[in-house]
Length: 121
Image 1 (cartoon, helix red, strand yellow):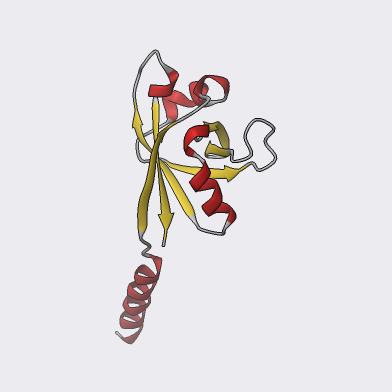
Image 2: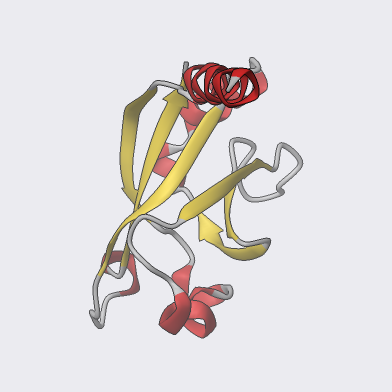
């Protein structure tokens, strides 16, 4: 009985520590859908899937470039017109997270995939 109680307490403690607060700070289309692996991976992508954001400060086209990856595969970028704040937060050590918010069959690649970016507290 005592070991069951200890196990339950450890489980509660672990779940309490695992909780984080995510604050939505940006909702953006994926830039570069047609140039990277997003089209190839389209059938596997799902709304809610976690995305990884990677800073590319040495990108020759955009010093604030933030690459968007899904399971280690490059999908594209946060749009150049919307990436400055996220890039600055990432460089300052702020933890950010992202996910797929919407998938939509559309002839315009800018309207196919919507990304939500969160600051993790």
